[in-house]
Amino acid sequence: MRYRYYFCDKCESELVDFLNKNNISYKVSGEDSFLPLVIFNLWSTTENLNYYFEELQKMNVNSPIMIAEFSASELSNAKLLVMTPKKQCIDILNDDAYEYTCKWTNSSGEIISKHEEQKELFVIKKEPSSNSQTAFWAESTGFSEIFTDYRVYELANSNSLTGIDFKNVILKNRDFSKHIYQMSSKNKLNNQCIVFGYGEKRQVCEICGKEQYFIDNAYQLHLDFDKIQTHSDLYVTERIFGEGIAYPLYIISQRFYQLLKKHKLVGGVTFSPIVEANNPTETNQRTAL
Ligand SMILES: [Zn+2]
Image 1 (tube, rainbow, N blue to C red):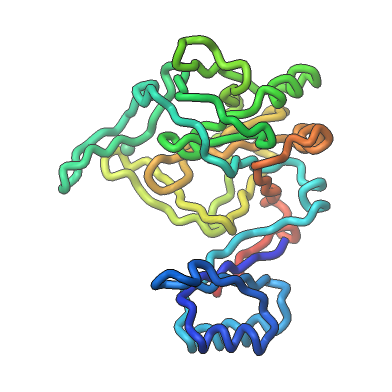
Image 2: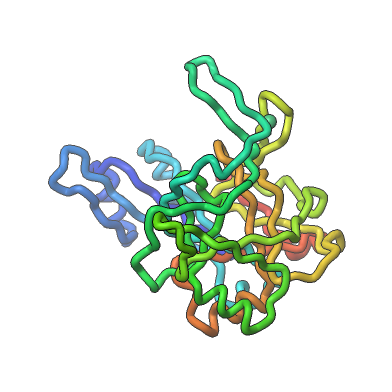
């Protein structure tokens, strides 16, 4: 695993000179606009990384976004992986499909609702047009729900994958979509299976005290595998991750991952290997910048 540090800042000549001098490749976005931006990456494996960080800090360059990147063998050796769709291209029309346990009006008169539970099937505006993507998220539900292409549904059925529930998605004309399914699981991993302390920022609900954890692109889920009672090809955590709408993480087995790969169904999805937290040699403690 390595970290990618994604930088995006005002295109100042001092910074561009520094990047040129050190052979760091970059691109300029909005060159003709009033605020051109310079975009570049460094990696935790980059030589002289600390020197670069110091110099960039002296130039007051914005802090980078940190993203964990995994090698093919790391992905193929993990027992379990978190699966996250990259693309948002589903519009849900019935937001009332959810019921909330906490709802209040904040000081600016905004209604805040939290801890949703799905009560009805989702109705969507239209099916995604691209068929190179495997899984999708929706604007109004964020990562809370995961929608998959029908080929994932067929793959799971023909290989007798366990623990996966595919729910129908309803189109505007009230027919069930033949292209899109909502993927979920009754195999809930409770919070006791999760080993916290690997970069989550904890928040507490103002009303009920329920905990929520903000995670970023560098986060890797750590699980105590001994506490997982069942064997399944899909698990979901409780809805405890994220700022705003809390979402669960969708966890797939290595077997499911291999099948997706074999059938070229990994487009538009990111995978993150889960770390077995019982074994300290396998943990990846995050390096602070
Ligand atoms: Zn609450």
